[in-house]
View (cartoon, one colour):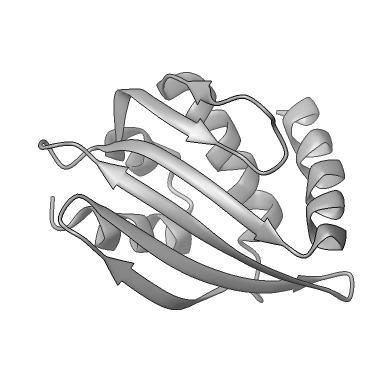
Length: 127
């Protein structure tokens, strides 16, 4: 399967839902900047990460930094949507099987969070 971070980069290019499903542990926990409680389980995490990929992962999206540890990585990203610059990090942890077990997204500035909150709500409602 290769390194979990490489799998994540490949997903962000392809947006292949089946590939994302294969990367996630069944008990994965997702933490979003626009939802106040952790989302638990593969089904809800697939829904949120799919929506985030649709909202954020457009043509201007790029990773600009990476920090790796043994079972985790932090990937810094940037994008600009409707004139608002978005800066954030994906914090990814994986289990001994190489499956993503925890995924936390942090975004700044506040104007970007507010915009993403509205866009994610619309994306999730239509999913």
